[in-house]
Image 1 (tube, one colour):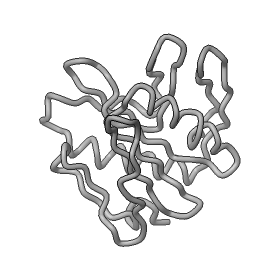
Image 2 (tube, rainbow, N blue to C red):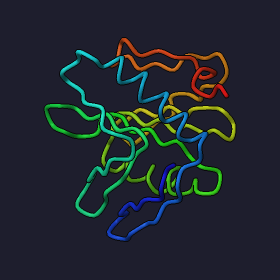
Image 3 (cartoon, rainbow, N blue to C red):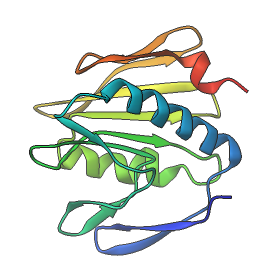
Length: 156
């Protein structure tokens, strides 16, 4: 059973609801696949789900999945699995923070529509690279062993 948690956004505490069972299933699948894919890669480390990550002086976020670079201990990939009743912090507020810190990769996983928004950092912020659904393949070129279909991720 998952519990609620708190994030600090620009110095203010933001209580978050406990994730649903489906949310946790999706989270576990992503962690398992990415964990297996980076096994042997010394340049990256997968943090436990919703581990607190201080992204700047005023914000501590708890991404559902955090992949950090070993050399700098900075976020490389954050994954937010959004919740039906608590999506604004992930889709707006935290996305703006990720943009400000120039996170290289952000995935917003939406179980409401069974799709994934893929963002890459570029000189002006985050750029939407695509929205994946169904039989499309989720992959990241900097994690060459990682590949799964969107349908696999959202399977019942």
